[in-house]
Image (tube, rainbow, N blue to C red; front, top):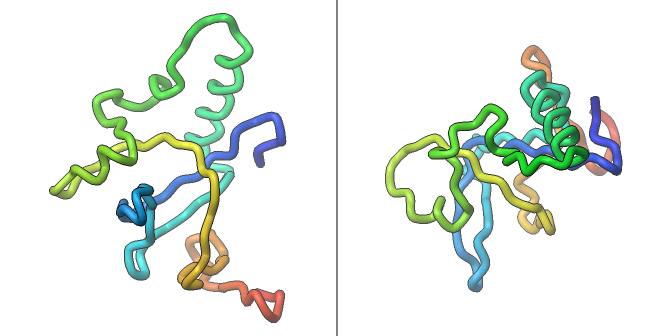
Length: 125
């Protein structure tokens, strides 16, 4: 179920790095292993999206991170910079811009058995 304009877009980042660039915190790829998933139909994401939309329509003050996430593992992007050892955590934020200066990313098929990649110039997979 892709996100509609009334619903938030959900993005998952796996194996990314946090760094500072001119005073701003930036999430960057980690050399050929970062995985970015946007609005994918994954059962956990759909469950989270349904609960998030329902909580925003109700009058209760539910914390959206409490649906299936341990609050102790929730970090800000700034806190991510202070982590010096390998760890697992959740980071919630609002994406304001996506830069593709160095063209390290490309669109590809997300199915496990598929290795096709998209060409921006040829407009084909």
